[in-house]
Length: 188
Picture (cartoon, rainbow, N blue to C red):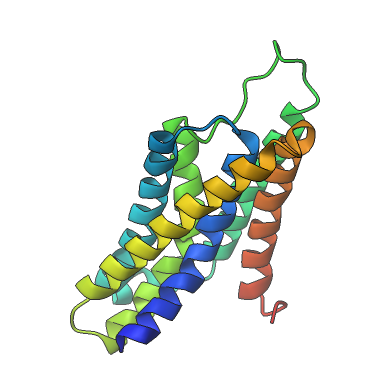
C-alpha cells in the first residue's frame, strides 16, 4: 500500500475522532491544552490499534465482528449523545455529566469511533506484510485532527455555549447513524 493511500485512509478514519473532538470542545469550552492532548492521544491510540487488531485477527474473528460492528458503534455513540442531550434538561446540581475528560467516557468514545478501523485492518492483512507505517500515520493524523477538533469546538463553544452540549450530543448521534447507514449501504 502506498503512503499517499495510507494518508488518505488515515484522514478518512480520523473524521469520527475529529467530530467527537469538536463535540468535546463544544461541551467543555474551558478545556486545557494537556486535557485536549490526552483525549486526542487516546482517540489516536485506538484509531491506530484497531487496524492492528484487525490485521492480527483477520481470519479468526472477522466473520463474528463484521456483521455487528456498525451496530455496536451506533449504540454506544447514540447512548452517549442521548445522555449528553438529557443532561441539559437538569439543573447544574442534578447533572452527572458526560465529561469526555473522564477516562471511562473517553475510552468508550475512542472505542466507538475506532471500530471501523478494525475492518480496515482486515483489509490491510491481505495487502500489507508490515503494518507499522500505517499505524504510525493513522495515529499521527488522528491526533492532529482530534486536537484541531477540540480547538474548533472550544472556539465556537463560547458562541453557542447555551446549546453546546445539545450540539455535541447530536453530533455523536449523527456519527453513529452515519456509521450504521454506511454499513447498511444506505449512505454513499
